[in-house]
Image 1 (cartoon, rainbow, N blue to C red):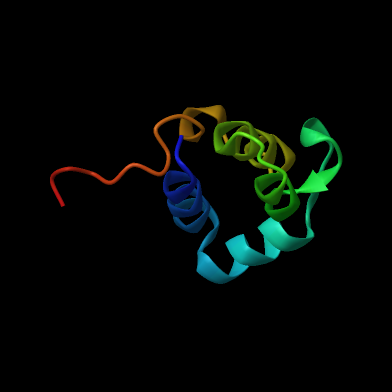
Image 2 (cartoon, rainbow, N blue to C red):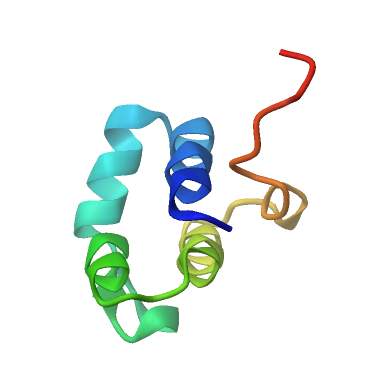
Length: 74
């Protein structure tokens, strides 16, 4: 997952405003007790951050994969 795909997935799943709040404020234990933004700045893999965010927010596993990719039909 590229960083641009991460941000698209966050926006698609949580909305722009709430997604930005989550990535700024929510501490994710699965990635070293960092927020998503801190993990990005530290160079963590965006896919690992996305999966940690999904787990913390109880996103159904069916929506974890393929997120952040544009539908080619649009």
